[in-house]
Image 1 (cartoon, rainbow, N blue to C red):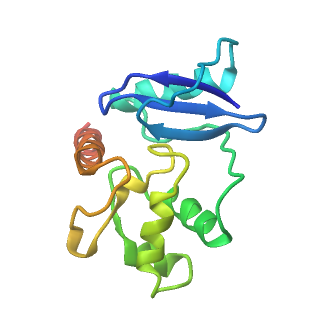
Image 2: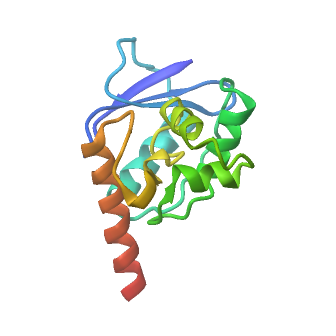
Length: 159
């Protein structure tokens, strides 16, 4: 696994890739030796994140490596990728979409275990009634990401 730490408007992001693709994107810096070898996936991830935060990218196109997680968690993560940019879903809506309408809390746990923050947009999942609840990166980061996407979606609507 190769790691780098990059700066972003929501603080440090730690990116890791393996032989398949992006395997981790975490908030904060990890305490590991950064990769010094050039890596196409790390470079692409860094470039796409920069474009995302600049409001120029609304859909990530990266190879994702998911070697962890239960079948339910992987189903939730796949569903998160289907939530359109600038939109939100409740934990209950995601639970229903993956076939278990009563599993809203389990969806919350799966979101918390999401190994690909931002790229797999768990920040687009909110509590019932749109409440800003639970986010592994902290509510201020979640709010920043949702506000960024709402602003860009509105700008794109009017252009």
